[in-house]
Image 1 (cartoon, rainbow, N blue to C red):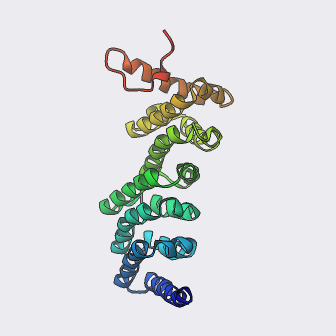
Image 2 (image 1 turned 180 degrees about the vertical axis):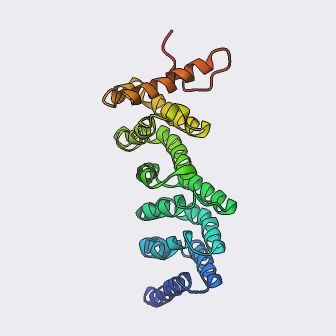
Length: 252
């Protein structure tokens, strides 16, 4: 009987949440964002059971037309991810899309919040799913957002490869080839060069000689750019304490 009585209350709570998140007034939408966090804390099972439907209403607030709503949604997402963790796997695609769309924001507060939320996801959400989705987003991003996502890919590679090497080969390698395929890479900005080097080194650290074998099927300029990056990294280490992956160095 108690369960039957709780169902109408739960339905009422969810409907209230949906109405607030879709309200015309921005302050009311902010109340909806706050209510979702409250529900995650007080009724995590209710949220987990209805994750897909709830996030259909919540994710648009990550791209809200009002900066304050967007900022609040990004801010509370840290706690939401911390509570639900892998329970967010069914909505990881739309969640990553909502976060990464803000990585090109010209508003410093929104950009900083998006960077932190991406970092939160990397630390708490299923890393295999996250690597796949970050890779998918590559073709839809540009500028700083693309560089930020590529940095996260570099961090995920070390964890994912020992568990699912085929995932790294299928999703992360094309990102590297895409960067290396740009014939202007040697003269691109230092930021681009640094990010591409991180990804190449992360992949080489876990794949070793297999990375060069995979590169063998790529166009000559891709192989040349990869060799330049790896060789430059070895050269940088001469005469100082080395911080690059040990696997970059040939056996003496």
